[in-house]
Amino acid sequence: MANAAAAAHGKTLAAWSEAEIVEAFTRFEAQDPEPKGELDHTDAYTLLVAVVLSAQATDAGVNKATKGLFAAASTPAAMVALGEEGVARHIRTLGLYRNKAKNVVELSRLLLERHTGIVPEDREALEALPGVGRKTANVVLNIAFGAPTIAVDTHLFRIANRTGLAPGATPLAVELGLEARIPDRFKLHAHHWLILHGRYICKAAKPACGRCIIADLCRWPDKQF
Image (cartoon, rainbow, N blue to C red; front, top):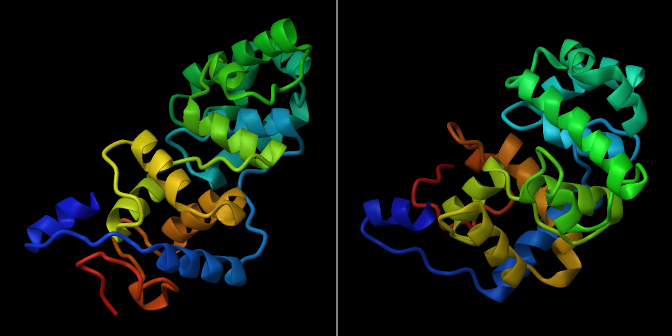
């Protein structure tokens, strides 16, 4: 965490001011006004399935697997008909593929049983589906339904702690911290900006501080230029 890293250097990170947060997200917005997620999908259902499959997998790996899967089954009814073995054949390159196949088929069955085959626009209903946690629900609500949710993945968790933007010991603590601090006008795209920043710039092992557009605002003691 950010303050843990700072403690190793004998200091505690100062909190970002409101003006600094606005400045950071203004820069993100100027650089990429309409950021997009990198999982291939055509509707809320295929997005939901792709996000469930993305656990402990890269978006590129998921996209390779879902190309064939969605060609074979792109609706809840078709996925149930395909069955666990059929789904597993398409996603065997992904980690935990058998458990993921089971979850995808069962969530598809429950969508038909509980929601007439339509992905619900409700976090509680989404989280009641197999394989769907808070992060997955937030991604679907944000991308499919335009809700200003913040989905905290490993990249966003790292950035929030490393930079001092919203330190937290758990993903939920980081999510709530970001929701409290990020101005409403930036919230729709906030998690996309931060996730992409963590994926390509503020990487875990070799962060590219010299190319970071918020380096002057960042509190990380080990940043390098």
